[in-house]
Length: 141
Picture (cartoon, rainbow, N blue to C red):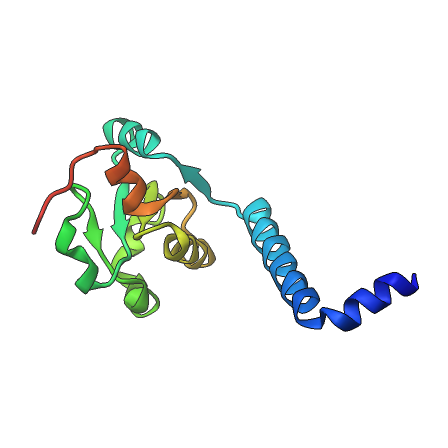
């Protein structure tokens, strides 16, 4: 036991950094396990687009759109989503697939949509980067 205490005293910054990383991993996994929206891979989004006519919602900021958008997607930046949710009221019972650049902002958007009563919400796991890695097409506006 004294060896452990001695190690902690000598390497306090290392122990603090380890504890911080561990806490972050636990928090991230807890969020992932308790999320109530679906994670969809790019091929699953294509399948949904071909069968369910979902609302595709791009929550990236305008400056990020230079590389293109998924065809048929509606752009509504996450920074504006809270103020503009009324615009989506008519789509409350429609499947909604949200995406961003890498997947974290779309998860936030999914939680916001669910709190406002949207019932069928999913996000593109890995975001537009995963879409591009799967060599799927984008449209430029």
